[in-house]
Length: 237
Length: 307
Image (cartoon, rainbow over all chains, first blue to last red; front, side):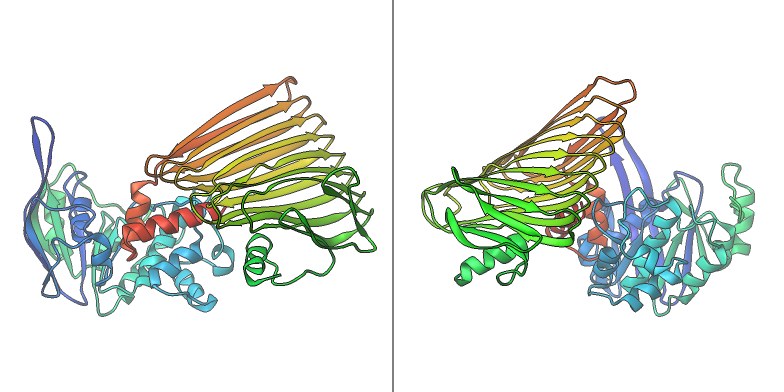
């Protein structure tokens, strides 16, 4: 279980400070899919970055499986089972798909294992295994490799920051199958995509850094319809 | 050859023993062993140190090893090696110098190599430089490479110097005739107070000649690197130089481009990017379980080996 207790995050500049997240209290249970949604600038990506340790809260606590991880580094959190798929996948000069999948899984994978990870995200291993993770790959290819790395981590808490962006040529059906296949773990997805919200056990809606509603898609829809600045995206957007 | 010498030989040329085929192994300023074949003749020069390597026409998929091993201090070794590649031949030449210097005296190796490629011939040239032993003693390598590419000939050069060499001045000169192609990949890592300077002057003389130079370098501690290239486009030709450098600590890298186009159809490009390791690359690898130091090492290794 993951618990966020009174989490606050603010950005301070010389004369001003801006509250990005205010007093966040949330619980995430094992074997459930949670989708965090909300308008641009509502703090969704900031919240998941706090969970991964990429950002540090100003105050509050993060408890994962009864352990206070608020002060753990990114890699310490990774090594207790938290994994993270970036919204904008990172490119590297010289590192290959095989290298990152080996690092992700913590050991040297044979071809069949790499084939398993890549075919799950719709890529043919023999075409990609020795490709460098650089700008020669398309945004959609990078995004799918990012997903494959999370699969290779076999994490207990899997976080996906806007996983649908750029993978429209594949299909949402395949993407949602991946999320549904992640057993014995907590899945947290940041998304605006209706198809992804439909598979959530619980949707958390943020606005201006605060949780304004939690519940099923049916519970959340009226809040979305009342919000002029926020619309869910359909399959072709 | 003792164990230390065997280890150096392996590091610079991937050889575990004396190779088959044509080779010339030089140790501590003298010939150690040499072998010619029916197709590849290695002839010692009469008036100075060095060899002429004559590859007959139509020789396919053969290799030539010319490693240099130095295990003493105070040596100043200067050699002139000239390679003549016959028409339609395709060979791999593995060179390189390993200095293991435990003494306090500086050892220097200067390899002056020239390559003369006849029409339609191809050469893959692999050159590795390493320095080991007493960190305080000088291990200096100053290679000069002169390349003459005739019509339709191709040369691919892979040169690496991954740490340990305290000072190097590498000069590469090339003249390319019609349809000739030259590809150079340089990988460089400097530590401590190392000094490494690379200079390329490429004359694209022939119609449709082309050159691509990619340099990946990492400078650590207080080391200094300088990369200077001069592309001269005298015909309808293509030239591309890419110089990427990663800076750590208080190191310094300078990249100086010079493009000299004297034909309106010459297309010459110089790209240079020097900076520290991107923070998001480190963060990504840390989310995969690596410490910041491990992530840095993986990024540097990939950057150097992936070129």
